[in-house]
Length: 121
Image (cartoon, rainbow, N blue to C red; front, side, top):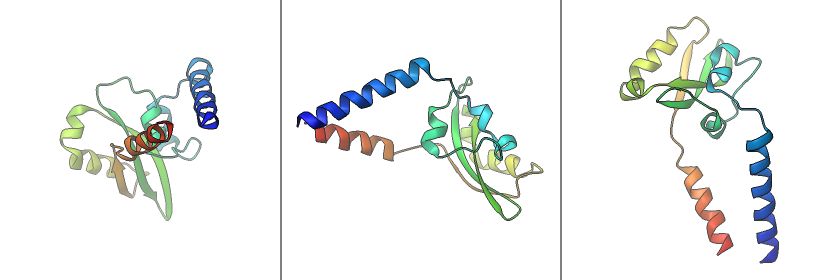
């Protein structure tokens, strides 16, 4: 049981160190215009980026020709209400042939946090 506590404390130290000394990543830095140089990795990555608006930073899978790309997309609250319109406006971009998925929520983060918490108890 002491090993689990030691691992948890070590993870906490790394998280605090990353938040205080790490550079802040912005959602707009990982959009589809810079997907070749700065691709997004996952929905969790997009959720941890900073978004200055009143919406969310969503994870988007899209196709550019035959290649599948991944990027973050800032979506305002008004665009979240009409997500189909947002997808069609994204597909009207020259680079994007087809939006495969646009994911703005993450339920598996909550499940993994519960799993870690249950291991500690």
